[in-house]
Length: 313
Image (cartoon, rainbow, N blue to C red; front, top):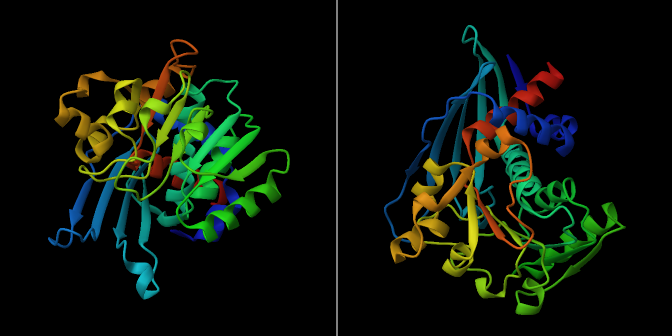
């Protein structure tokens, strides 16, 4: 059995190969039960959790297990630890134990970028990105793999981290104008794609600021009573998700508008698997606003981990 660490994951993955694998993996037959997230503490302000995410396809069986302790940084630990176990679909023998923390970064960004390939306008030029955490560089790189952005505006609370992110990205993408901005009507209204990967419990911008034709990507929130966008964003948009089962169980971006009576689960247009099977632009026109809400799926973990395993075995 192979033991695959984070360095090996980074050495073999590229967004070009991963996006192809994601499209093919979501388009084929798969099994993916509802993931189980267990809260470890009953205190109101404590979000410590442990989760188990199983999935399988015609080639492989996988299960991801992760712990999430958001206050860990104060004690010198990472907030998330994760491992993915792969088994042969044919005979069930163990194949690999893969670093799930690094796979999560790659697959989360790849899923958002794949959805953007179907939902954002092909002529999109301005990306507004919210966040400066571990996911930030992966997210921007993934979005640049599917759209030829000329400008990127970075918005984050931590000015030191966002400045470091700007420096890193500008070094690797000198042809792109990368700046640090704020969430204002002037910035949001000029965005073609808005990608949000934050821990914010409240909306990051006013949905009334969105210009027709904008695509909004939401990946940061996993809590039913919190959200990165407001109800106006949802009601103005055609809404797509990575998994209806998971999103409608966890994501306040949809659950809160449903509670308010301004949105219905039946208004979710499609899951990522539906988009991948069609594998073509899903916009109805250049003026509509689209939203993609992702909370993460076991299938995306399986696809990314298996791609790494196949490359290095």
